[in-house]
Length: 177
Image 1 (cartoon, rainbow, N blue to C red):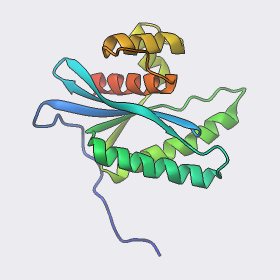
Image 2: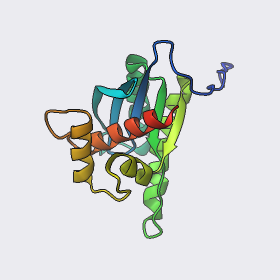
Image 3: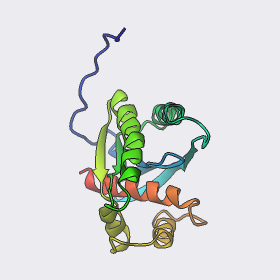
Image 4: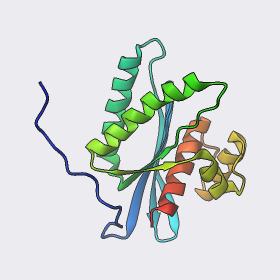
């Protein structure tokens, strides 16, 4: 039986009354999904939280997606972002299956954000990398160093999925207005 609950579509992103903007960046994955929550305070950014969601490798696809959804819903509820940024799907002709599988994770991310009434910015990885390093094809190491420097972190963000998620959040925050 389908629920008769309806939610209003998310509106255009508007700055919160405080002027601060909280953005959740997500680097989708079926084994490891990176996340980074940043707050934009005028021209400055602060990292509120960052980490990874590790999904059980031996679990079925359905179980992994259920776990991902539950973790994201909890993260959204506790982090209270105003906007979600997520890496856009990229399909390489030699590995179409990878894009199809990643689409499952992105679908769950979009679902969790929509259920919370949040808008989502889809960002190509090349745009994210270029906005932070000036090079749209920057390596994982270059991204980690850029994030460490920009966010004034005492150590490199590990694993690289965390740096990617923070980069997505920073890029989304810069593009939001």
